Length: 168
Image (cartoon, rainbow, N blue to C red; front, side, top):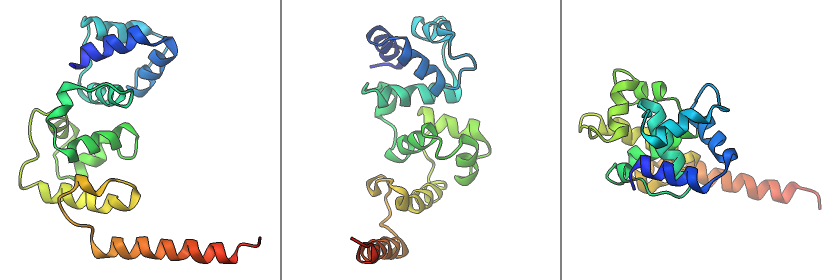
């Protein structure tokens, strides 16, 4: 369903606590002012930029299937999730992935533009480096680098040794 429809449904089905949570996640300055979010649902005001991306991810996390996210590449939806979780800022992601600024990356996150081929290696490199921090390997098209496998193996050995040394 479209973002605006999902938001309306969310607001109809949930109490003010969830609305306040929504406002917090999309960085609205005054979380007690429900008029802003209601304006989004009524389409008298529309979220733009990063707030729109965060709203879509919030609704996805609440279990809604958002039409605008369906055709995005898996790496794009994963980056949206990382930004939503505050694991990386939009500006840092843009710089890491070789974009001029956050606005240029936002066009990709909204689905207005695809990941262009010359930037794909940077995206793949970024996600390959993130596999050690619980990002599903299925979202990248490169196999895990050998050093990641070695690190995982060393962590497993460390756990085993720690278990042996722990007094019972």
